[in-house]
Image 1 (tube, rainbow, N blue to C red):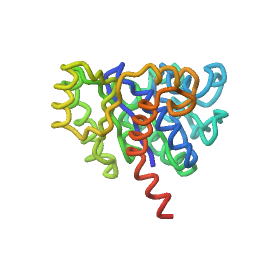
Image 2: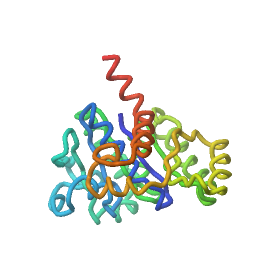
Image 3: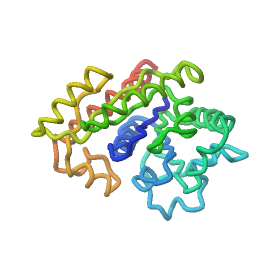
Image 4: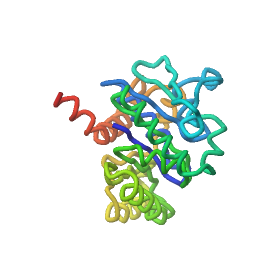
Length: 251
């Protein structure tokens, strides 16, 4: 299974969700993390930046003569195709480069149980290639007004890719992140979003334990002291990975 985590708005916890999907899937099988965001937050959540220097990187999916070889992270069952600054130029390439990236992502996926792709916060060729290769797209949102306004563009992009490039892409799943229980505005916007899209539960609340876990390159359910955060993040990851677990059980 290939899962893309995407939102063209930044600051919504996109990489936090992507890395937790990687950690959770790796507890049951072999996982490849692909970082298509030149900021490299997924990369630095799994390895030190220095370890990724000089390695084959994700931009080579679009520009290389051969499929790039992922690096081992040293974390059990997790390999990585790291980000590089060269990714900033890939959105200016033509569609044939995106179709090459789609083919190579799918080829790499044959070696793994799950592939998780973390996209840049933008609409462009990287997102097109990732969605064209994927079975599932997950869109993190925060309960703010702009999240409601931006839903249509994300849905439109996924629908267009499904119709023209990838009929196997399932309808988008939306994950609500950084919820503040005491905020009346969050409650109202959450209700509105739930009427518009497939908003998965549980909702993820704003918790310092998540930032602490990512800084230590571990999931929030390992070594932390927040049972509530552990429960929420395990549950949301398990729900999103349900197809993968189902296949494993059927084999």
